[in-house]
Image 1 (tube, rainbow, N blue to C red):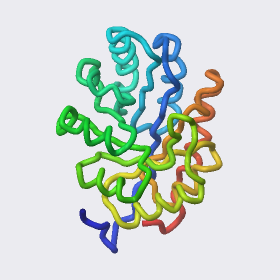
Image 2 (cartoon, rainbow, N blue to C red; image 1 turned 45 degrees about the vertical axis):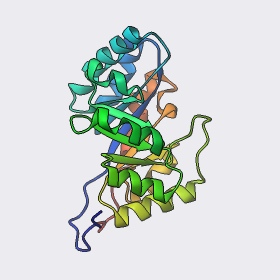
Image 3 (cartoon, rainbow, N blue to C red; image 1 turned 60 degrees about the vertical axis):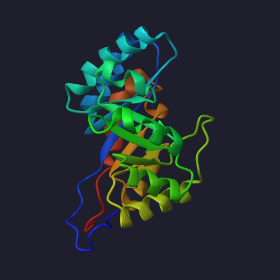
Length: 219
């Protein structure tokens, strides 16, 4: 895999990657989602769906996909690879190297295949070599646990320095955004903490966007 050129152009300002809560009512969530999409530069939305029958899941994804995709952002499903095409989603986010490699044939090359929950540097490099469209670092596992923040920043900086595949860095609070941007993240993922107060979502996203600006002379 090619390394980044030493004389790179100044890198673009990172964009937002929104991770929804577990959505069980698309109509109710539409208001908060629309507010978030209009409050900042959102590149993608990872839709996490509450358990339901297959037809209900597809209908939820289609309804929210219309909201997301009309802004130019990509709609990604959390896992649920078999539903991606039928829901009209742009791709899927997989957790762990095994789930990612197992889903590649069903997603590539037409759809986006992203991956997080990568435990080791070797797993990250394996995913990139296999064709991951992005790698996410710092995202919580199924128990809500994540690595020490200093380790996350170090992993992002290592990846940004050496590899070309885009890096999504998960920020667990607004205070984590600036260090992750400085480390070299291409996208900043925001999760459950953004959606706590539906009426304040737009303000939260707008505040987060203020921390996305790159330090001067960053390349």
